[in-house]
Length: 86
Image (cartoon, rainbow, N blue to C red; front, side, top):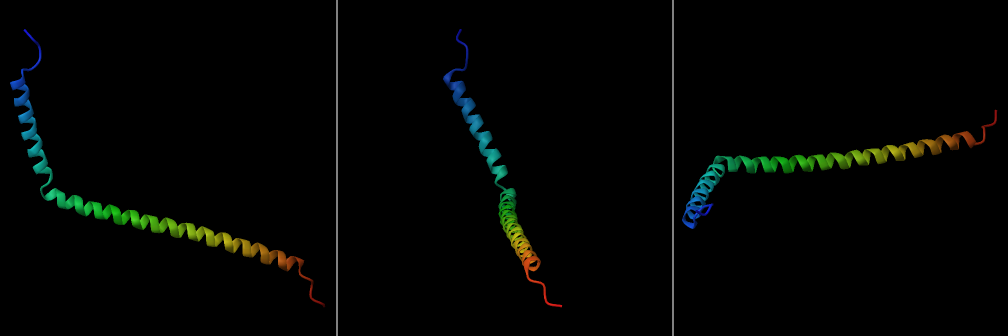
């Protein structure tokens, strides 16, 4: 007696699986599909805002660095500048 399923049993199992999968797909694509669309736009918006904040934070660090260089340069200029006559 051979083990395993006969071709007709395999066909029956495949048909049942396809039917079950189609029902699950229909259930997933109901009102929840609209919610997933809103969640996707929310995720895209959040990612965009995060990127903008990261760029601005990088720009802030650059501006602070430039301000620091200007401060050091002006401090050195004041130290080496000739003293005013008394």
